[in-house]
Amino acid sequence: MSSLPEAVPFFSQWETPDMTLAVLADGAEAALRRDPLWQGSGAATLDEYAVWAANVCGMACLKMILATRGQIVPTIELARRCTGYGGYVVNEGSIKGLIYAPFVTFVKQEFGLEAEVMTDVAAADVPGILARSRFFIASVSSSIRWPEREPPSKGGHLVLVTAASDNGFRFHNPSGHTSATQADAVLAPIDFDRFFANRGIAVSI
Image (cartoon, rainbow, N blue to C red; front, top):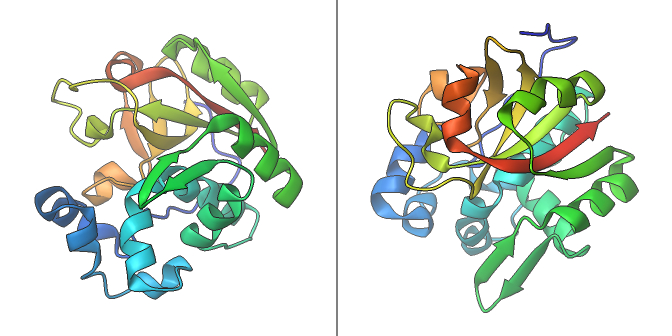
């Protein structure tokens, strides 16, 4: 794999990173009401955190990108700001997003990041994308945390790909359930491809 020019900090989409299995077992809102660190999310209330945290994998990826250059912004604060650009649509407690095009506008205007929505991306294209851009936020199945399993579908979750080559993809998974499936998880391209929805966002800093 290509070498990393600098370490990329990892952040979970939950403030307590080891809550993934509880979220899967009990549902996000019930489990996340037990997160003792919820106030670090930037949410104004526990209710706001419990509703939003299951939807902020993209904001966790953005938080990691920003942290690479020393800027720490809480995930729910990022989500709230991104919503102002249309990156999320909130309707009676349901949240739709991340919507890619408004996200690109958001990160450009708020943080000066260059980003590009990419579709019809083959897994074999990702190393070339990372040769031009620092990061690739990839749409994958959340079951990528269990690479030995066959995913029920592709997409629906976002991970931050930090390095890729013909030998392997390295990525941070905001909802990984163990340390090995969270920061610097590595999969062979053929395995990554089983979860990959062939779309994402290239980001330069």
